[in-house]
Amino acid sequence: MKHYLRKKREVLIGAAFFWALFGVVYGLYGLPAGPFAYGLVLTGALLLCWLAAGYSGYRKHIKEIEEMAQMAEEGFLDLPRAGSLEEALYAQALTAVQRERECARNRLQKEWEDAKRYYALWSHQIKTPLAALKLLLQEEGPDRHGMELEVLKAEQYVEMALQYQRMAGGTQDLVLKEYELDGIVKQAVKRTAPLFIYKKLRLNLGEISGTAVTDEKWLVFILEQFLTNTVKYTKEGSVSIFQEGGKLVIADTGIGILPEDLPRVFEWGYTGFNGRADKHSTGIGLSLCRQMAERLDHQIRLESKPQEGTRVYLDLERKSLVIE
Picture 1 (cartoon, rainbow, N blue to C red):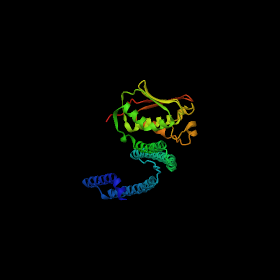
Picture 2: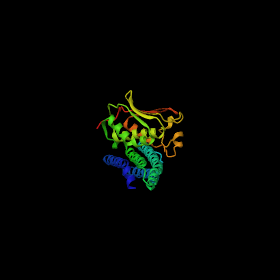
Picture 3: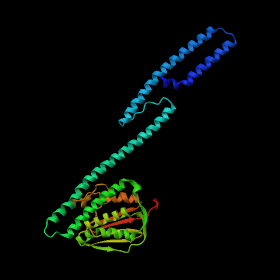
Picture 4: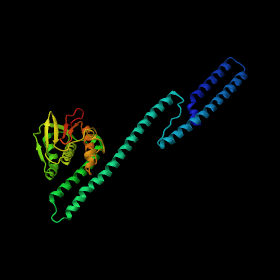
């Protein structure tokens, strides 16, 4: 009640002012007090009726707001009908906040579902090299090269999980500097060298020159993922790394990608025909590469023909991010 009367204080003060004004006028002219008293009682009664009717609507409106607050705690907000322009503007602002909150909730839910799906796949991935290592250790005179290969696979899976976490942190985890491309390419080649040795594939490393403003760890990871894929799907022949038209190119003589799979190879969890043939493919690595490249403002393009090979074009020119 007190809050309601405070809301109506301008009306009450105005009524008291006019009552006082008419009382002064009646007194100055020496008019009888009866009509003034009668008018005072009549207008006071009307004012009380108006206040009582308004208080009933006020209590109903407060109850609607209390119910709205309860629904907001439960995640659902249904605003009552606005009673004034001010309330309409508040309702408009609250609706915009609710819409943004719902978008944020859906985004977080999707990220949570993606993370659960990713780590479920990752847990199966990491078991494969660990199981292979266990078998190799049980052999007499363990195959050292085979063990190195399985350790490399395990390291790649762990690195993929770490990069996934870094990417979930957004661009604040990026360390952007100007790097020599030759050094970054050689890092990726060195890390994947055991794969080339195991498959007996030839690596043709052309002259790499120039610099790129990028995040070193992310770019090395992207190159390593593409090199790993080229080795996985190249049975014989070679893999070449060179520059063409200002772009970094990774070309192989592998089995290639079917035309219907090519537009979807960067989709999360999409493996395509080749991935389904390879039982250990999860369709996550390339999706991470595309997302990382977008964060770095780099461009990735694939060209491929079945049984002829695949070319990966990396355009490392950046247009928006700032060098630290």
